[in-house]
Length: 547
Image (cartoon, rainbow, N blue to C red; front, side):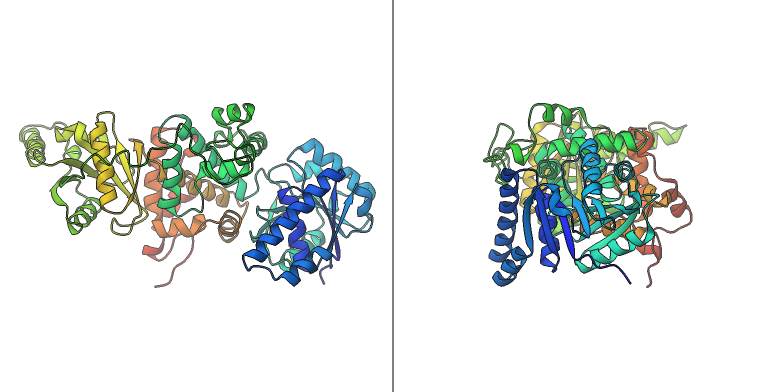
């Protein structure tokens, strides 16, 4: 039978610590909430009160239950208040030296049989545990913010954690209404190891001037249904926290460049631009701690493209199913469409009569597109738009349109892809067309994956690498990203839906343009595609699908 934890101590009452106190007290556990001094204790008490009052105001918590919750919490200054607890959880800042010192003190103060837990999100639980005389009773208990809402808890065992400790803590997670995912002590565990590579790549994309902060965030929210764009999420997490997590994972994870913090991130932290808590990060906020945006020099001017008339006649270039789908959608929306086979796919030269036929195809395309207002290249995110643009004979008027998230009629987001030859007028006209179609449009350059797939696919590839290393299961990885990060689908659910062959093609194109080891398609992904396990449409991918 699993051990019952009757009294729990929580050390550190910031946003996360106060949230952990609330989780325990909501579920009938007596809590001793500890801070270093009276001022910090008062702030922690205020954090708990504000959270529970919000829950009452939103109808998520009955007033009587709120009062009972608070009655279960004892606030105290100093660790001596933890002499009778069954479990002590630290939630202090993410610094190894601080956590090691604190665990050593908890080891001295807490009863011999008490379990000691660290809420670290990326540090080595083993290095923290060995600072105590009871490393077998030390475990990682990683809650996600906001702790009362997010259902995931990563339960991290070290090589010396006693099996019964891990079992008892898993039972405690179930009692708290949480899903406990068991993992071993590896940099970033599951969720952060996958999340922060993606966030770091988004910073690099913004730093390079490839797309605006608003367009990067919109691409992931509108295109892939994520609850928050990456740069907005970084502001919420805190840029200093993100930098610390990335630095730790880079050092502990074998110097993977996916986790080498983007230079811009370090510069912003040094400048004190830490996100919401400082009032400015990637965005500017009305006040420190506020979630409300304030206009700044980078805020787009509303209606900036309103003066550009929506194109009435559009040339759609492409020969695949995507081009056909886009042409049919535009036609159904009342746009006059001139459909042209992809002249960029014709070989540049050939022997004898073949070269003449190739040139004839290009010449015909130029004639067909002569009278349209805008030329659109419709295709997958793997195809360079510039190749087709040059073959049309009017590259200044050519943009790529990539409908993200499904067929054109269902997609909410359109990536407007500009080449080095695309004119500003053509970009504005494309935005007006998207607005007339009721779609959100973002602008990006002509690179493999554009914005949405260039950020999504490496994250999916990282998940496959995690699976093939036997670090965790597909079910636990999916659960970690859905319950810990609020994603609408886990990476393996998404891969089976998108198609493993599609994912492989996009990741291969990304790696071809940026040949870094961390972007190479995972061998397991290649092997499944070779074996014909392409996902739902073939009846099996990472999972079997009946019917």
